[in-house]
Amino acid sequence: MSDVTQIAAIATAKAQQLGIHKFDLSGSAVDEASVQVDQGEAKQVKASTRSSVMVRVWNEANTVGVASTSDVDELGLELALKMAQEASAFGALEHGSDFSPAATAPIEELPVNPTSPAEISTLIENLIDTEAKLLEAHPAIVGVPYNGLAQRDAQRFYLNSEGALRQEARSSTSVYLYSKTEEEGKRPRSAGAYRVSHDLAGLDLEGCWKEAAEKTISHLNYQKITSGKYRVILSAEAFLSLLGAFSNLFNAQSVLDNRSLSTRESIGDAIAPPSYLSPMMLSILTILVKPPLTVKARPPGERC
Image 1: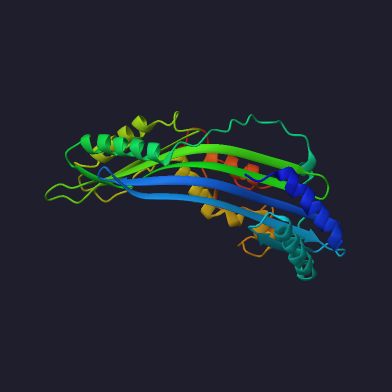
Image 2: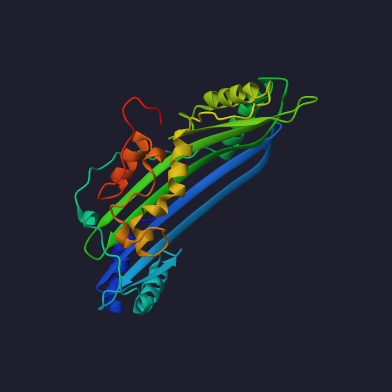
């Protein structure tokens, strides 16, 4: 993983050499390994080490230039700072970005418990065993075409010329299983499950294959659905995805960049009829948009 303190020292020194007085860097580094199996045999093994850094430089006119690099050594950072410095001459004159006031504010230190990665052979053995248990759960389950067991060490950091220095490092291990069924006279059915944990020892492999089996089996005796209107219950992930699909309506940066149906004059206007918003949706949008939306929640007791 990258030494953030060393990166900060290099960036500060190179910025002084180039005559740059205001800059910031944000970046990440990821070490990842994953395995996939098929019918009890290893199918695919992947490993990668990735890093990326985004550099922003402000000039005397307070316009900003941006550059990116995957090299965090002295030469890579110097070239990125120089390119961002040159690009700042073409920066936007209106609605320019700036440092966040929270960048240097005190924050609570979160506990970091780095874990040692498991051997690739251990990952393969665990995934083969998990796949076998899922295949044995029901005669109709003939394969697990999509599966994977991965471990990941990730680091993120931010620093700027005002002395801000933030960094975060996390380890995680995850597994996903997506099974497939075949029955005579019926269409194939599929379902999946996913689990994530801090390390392999704490990963709920049993819970994952059992959930995948339960979902898959529940789809076997399917029947046609009569046309009509039905109430739909969205999972948390689906709700956030749906909300994100319309986020440019109330995202401030999208409005300033003219990438939204809303404009700067739209603040305080209703963006949807009250009947379209449940009380929960209304409360979320009220937090995201200031001043609050000019919409009203439904009367208490009325279904959304």
